Length: 467
Ligand code: AMP
Ligand code: ZN
Figure 1 (cartoon, helix red, strand yellow):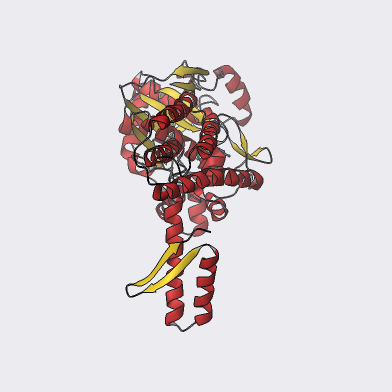
Figure 2 (spheres, rainbow, N blue to C red):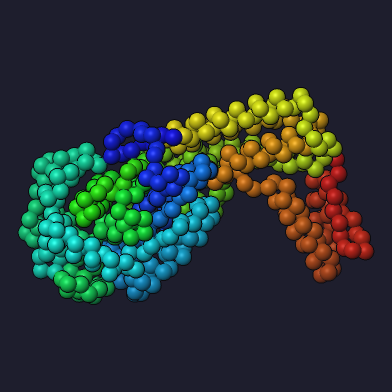
């Protein structure tokens, strides 16, 4: 399996530190608002990476943090006249609602920065003791020039960066590229005790600290959106590697932006749709299929037209699932026939191709194309004359290949049954209310869909008739 490593700018063979186990840390949201569908892309991408690693047999420990203390959190809490803690609680709850709706699997742990203050303080202390950080009147800065490899992730060198940063000289820092790892409390801000007085952690330090604490000093994969390469991940590397003397992460993965009119979707540009807004119009499967239809390292443009086209693509796939589910009920032959065995082998070939594509740096775009090819093939070769065993094999295979992508798990038959049962119950209610017109209308509507109702002593039964 190959993974593109931002650190080496190459696709590398994926060999985790421990056989069959993967430790993975993904930078999560700042919880001051609903997340937008651009953030959603990054969450979906790394959820897919995790699911696929699991599909390939790895035991994955997946950590995604919540940044619940920073300038944006403080500003928003002040505007809303609530505490930063209340704001964080609220939007963490909202995060789960949207992430669950997008079929994003829950992380092994979602640590909150404010729950790790003691560990962060110890981390900062360590860096000062080792001579990599210094205090100035209650603030603590990391001294970038003490880390020889500063810039290695983003491929920049410190001199160039320093030259660029000279415009905003901060008298307190020894060097313009030094960054705050502990911030002195300003009036009215939430703060915690520390050897440097009341204050709070800087942003970068929380991820280094929580990754160390929850996954160890060296982890397998550290990931986030492309905008996090610099300075966030560059700074995480500097702090972590200075503290431990070890490599922080073996692989660094970054997902490209979701754009809108060729501009990065972001809160600051106010060109965003929240995940929730998008989910009001499109099903989660559609959103995921759209997101994964491009490679994760390629920018993707968000548009309703592209979502509509993902929707019709998905319909084709679910039609096939619905057909196979119906065939499962109808066909009489159970055991696979000799002449079908060849075809079953042929279908397994699609799985091999899918794995080949996904093993190549999670090429979901090509893997989805393989699913389409396979479904077309199944549609034209499986029918009422096939055996149940072959039909079931095909159905299971479509679902199996959909699972790492977080799609194609629904049962069309069950959905339809649920929908009909709901209508039957509505008709019963209408009859109890003596609303005969509505009751008749529901029965006629169902009839036009080939569903007939029978009133029996045990209640109403329905059955589908051939049309
Ligand atoms: P934030 O809450 O802004 O810190 O972002 C949470 C995650 O979403 C980070 O990994 C960001 O890199 C990522 N992200 C932000 N905007 C976009 C975008 N337009 N497309 C893809 N990922 C994004
Ligand atoms: Zn982070």
